[in-house]
Length: 115
Length: 107
Image (cartoon, rainbow over all chains, first blue to last red; front, side, top):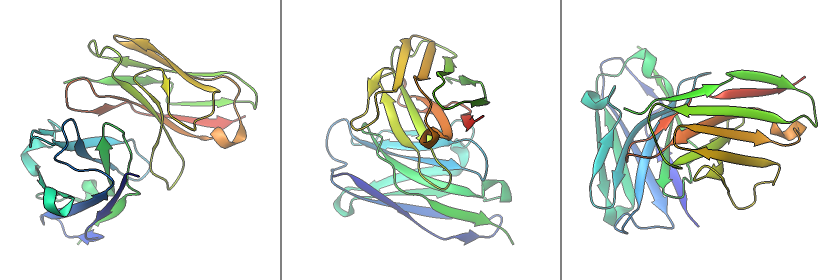
């Protein structure tokens, strides 16, 4: 059974860097074809895809946020880490990680950006 | 980058009605399209993958069709538990893109 769980700070200040961790089980990120992605959803708004890392370390980013995002994986720990720099109140959202290709999602973690 | 235009943004229908949502891709994505259901406070749930395949355990009143740039999601007989926001998502080019969502309400 594939499960994913997001973790990280619930509150960050403007201009700070956000680091989120996705810890997963039920699959290996060294298996061909597998990836883990990050998606966010501001309160009351639509889903927005952020980044995705594949088993071969291929990394893809949202063009609009690419300059602020870094995604990495630690296969031995079954974790994927997303960092987002220069946080702003508009980045307040629920952040989800999800498995590709099954598209199983974690429950999400809420991040508020406020001074 | 591939853009997904979903319509309508909201709709109101009666229990038992047929509900249709459309999603248009800005370029050919073959059948690389998912449909999700999201209820308030919950993570999205995959309903349809590869444009027309029903995810295991999903009721058969949900269906999807289309290929290329034009896709349709249908609820054949709307039930009270179907009240949610529905999203399309393309996965054609190793990047993902979501549609803007359709909020479905009961009339």
